[in-house]
Image 1: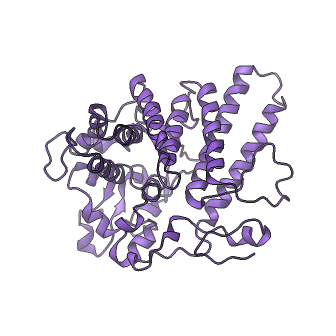
Image 2: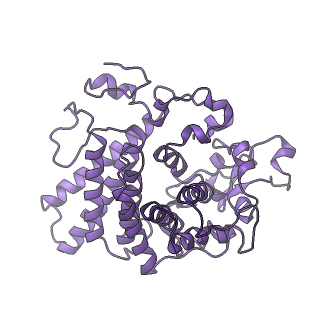
Image 3: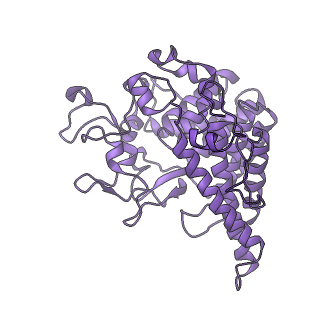
Length: 402
């Protein structure tokens, strides 16, 4: 749920909520289509076929990633590819969700077949990143709204391949997961790179305790967060003078994004993680449990990797480890909650989990539930696009402009 909705208790999605995301993803897709078309037409002279294939794999991986965000947010969306003629003028209709996922799967599969194991820098998605992203797409396809259970085993198989290959591992100390040293470490598989020329994040957005905080942490959510070392590693609970947020009538901040923040200049070179190995472990745990009809030994092991680290490798009655004798339903609930705590504030993972598990109302705060309808599972098609293109039919529950 969006931070302002959590903070103020209004689950009311405005008419143009998500319009900036719609534009950003489609702009990226159009740029990537131009690259793909140029590569298909042989416009990269003097380069080896291996280089051309790698660039094509990278472009298609990024296109799939953009489409996955769009289809999760808006449902049926127009499909633009390198073969779409004059897409600045053509009035495309929204393609069914399954067609969008078919393109996503095809692009990721191509990327897996062409991307190298080690591209040399974390800014470039590699072979394993494409696998992880496809596993995540399969996880979504197995869930709402497609609910195709055949994809549980496909997600589990891909995630397990990454685990078995052993090229990634968790950062051992929970306090160092988001440190500068760990940005290029074994857990960060793919990140948006922040540097002095291009910021990936802005520290003022994330720190309520420094007097900023465009992105605040819901107090009821913070109070549900298990008491463990991870809570204080990931959330900004104290100000610079060591006072708890309740002492200064404030909200908690997001400590994950503050480990290289300079509040005197408002500058940060922090990378923004897109895929972490922790996510792969949790994808596997969820998918293996659902495919098997109950937790397997490997699924229990996978989720306990992140729980054990979160607890500082000590027994914690407030947040115990998973066990093999749990029911499928109880284990699934535990994994989704573990994703909630471990992946919080990382590129909308929690929102997408709530949508695909169809639990948005269940986990909404009480003040929000009075405004909830099933229409809240999708964002509105942006007004400006809907007005220009009469073929872009609006999602239920929002004003139609054509």
